[in-house]
Length: 102
Image (cartoon, rainbow, N blue to C red; front, side):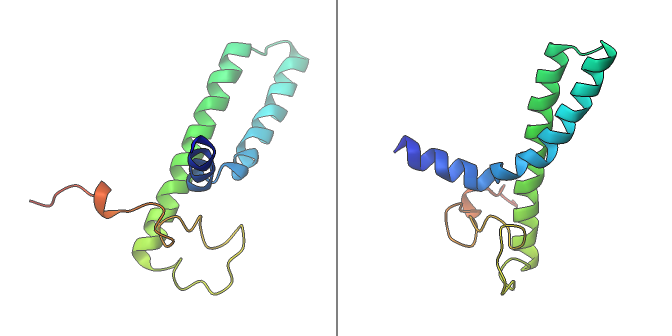
């Protein structure tokens, strides 16, 4: 159960793409370390922040691509094109998360 939930969470957040923000941050941290100005606490907070921002952007991209129909009309799905497919595959139900329009 926990393994399935973790796999779903990784799929929704598109966690493998976190490397695209973690690696440049670590390169910058290595430069700061060479200069003697690296703060471990700031580095951890920065890494947590960029991962959260990236996860939020990935989810919002999936949502708006779903609303526009872009993900449904993509005939050539790749890891880089077509989104996480959690909405199209019914893993994540949008109806349960929409605010009432009343």
